[in-house]
Each structure stands twice: as structure tokens, then as C-alpha cells.
Image 1: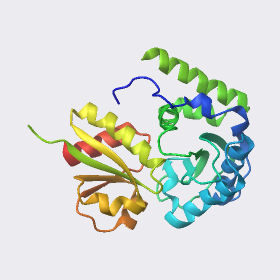
Image 2 (image 1 turned 180 degrees about the vertical axis):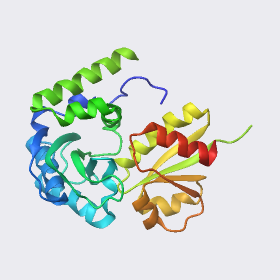
Image 3 (image 1 turned 90 degrees about the horizontal axis):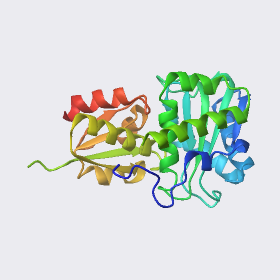
Image 4 (image 1 turned 45 degrees about the vertical axis):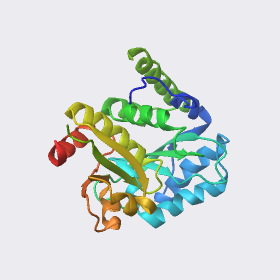
Length: 166
Length: 94
């Protein structure tokens, strides 16, 4: 994109991922409870209501495990709905990897929850998160973090460096 | 003067993985020096929009559900791996 910085109305990743939306070592026995954990984290941060978590699960039931977007990483989300109050992202690391039924990217160790009231306001945040996760050492650091604040600090640090590099 | 390639990034809802595909495709196209317009579509409108697209980007799972469409379908396994996107786009249009 031509515009190097966040566009008008675009919230940076740090603005969409508060510590209350980060869960470390969540227990999940199957993909439904893994998605639910990411939905609960969105609810905990005030972004969504419980109904959106059900919608995220229904999305996988309808369309399959395509939300497993990279080895070990699921992007749980559904479409804009009345149960979404504002844009938000959650990050949940799983205590034990979970099978989603994806042919190549299973098992999932990290579930990113995404809620959006429209199709644009979270673009910058999602781009930053994808950049962050594209590096294996950063991914491992996130997976082995022991506190939500540590994860949040990594993300803020990455975002700050990315901004100053522009 | 060539007209820009039209690419349709298809995902389930039109705002999560499809956006990632668009972002990655735009980076990859820049690297390849190819002029293209990348548009995001959800599964619901993909078949209609496919009529005017030159190439479709999506996951293996959704490609199967999309079935027969006119444009060539390129499937991406790792949505955050720029190398995979660059190599597959190079093979398809480069």
C-alpha cells in the first residue's frame, strides 16, 4: 500500500490487543474449546458478546478448518454481527496442541481471535500481527511467554520498531 | 501497455484470512514487479466476482468448495509466508 502509516480510522495492533485479551497456556481438548478460548478472551476485553464466540465456531462448522492460516496458527473469526461491539484481537496460546482437521497446518498451538464491525478498521493491526508471526524466533518467543504482559510487551516493541523503520 | 492483472483473494468471511492474502499478494507483486489489483471477497460473492478476475487466491479447503470457476485458482497453505506467495504468484503470472 502507498500509505506507510496507519490510515484514518485504523487502530494499531497495540490498540486492539489489551492484556485482558491475551491468554497463556489455555487448556483446550478440541478445536471448539480452542476457538471458544479465543472468543472468551474477546469477551473479557469487552470487544464482543458470547454470541460472537458461537458464530466463530459456526464459521468453522460451515466452511471447514481454513482458518488455520499457517502451521500451528488459527485465525478464529466470523463476520460483523450485533455481538461485535468494536474491533478487537485476542491471542491465546494452548497448553497442548489441538487438531483442527487441517491437512497441512495442524496441530494448532496459537489461536488468534478477530472481531470486526466492518471490513477495514483492523487492517493495520492484522498486517502487523502477520508480520510479527512470520518470523520463527518471534513466534517461538510468543509461544513460550509466561505472562500476558510479556506477550503484550513483545507486540508493542515490534510495532514501535516497525513504525520507526518506516 | 498491459492492463493490470485482476486478482481475487477469497476467504470465508471477507475480512480475516482474505485480507491477509491481499496484503501478502500486494507485497509479493511488488517484489515481482507485476501490476495487479487485488480485491477481497467472501465465499458468498466469490463466484460472481470470479467472472471478471484473472486469478483467484484462496486456501485448499475453500478452493474445493468454490468448485469450477473461470480463473485459475492458486491455493496458499501458509498465509504469512511471503516466500510461498512469491513463488506461487511467479509461477502463475510472473
